[in-house]
Image (cartoon, rainbow, N blue to C red; front, side):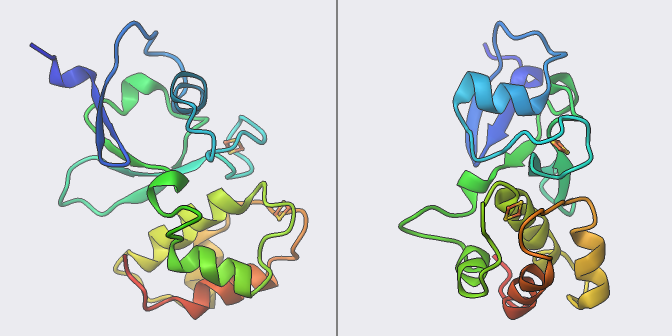
Length: 163
Ligand code: FES
Ligand code: FES
């Protein structure tokens, strides 16, 4: 019988955690064990937001973004984790991914999965989406290319698109 303490849901798929040292980071586990590589490693110390994923610990609790590089696997057992792959793909992009394209909010693209995760978390939350809440939501995400203005525009343009 599977021990529920060793289960993590990744993009709605149940994954049993076996033969893994629980002190590994969620980021390393996603990328190295499961090849879920849309979640990026930038700084690996909680400063850049490239590794952002959405966590939901209990189904009724509001989901929130976390830095996967700061979280150990043992801390997220039993949780639902959504990565960028769970939000959209080439054939079926998330509305915010389309908005990023339309507003030129992605240039080198390295930061983009993290911004999409933070933006979607805000849009799906109970908060009003305005300049202040967008600035708060993306305050942990760094972008070296865009100057941020197109990112703000993109998030605002789909502020009513809860998914
Ligand atoms: S890689 Fe996690 S915050 Fe930079
Ligand atoms: S688009 Fe290059 S770092 Fe953001």
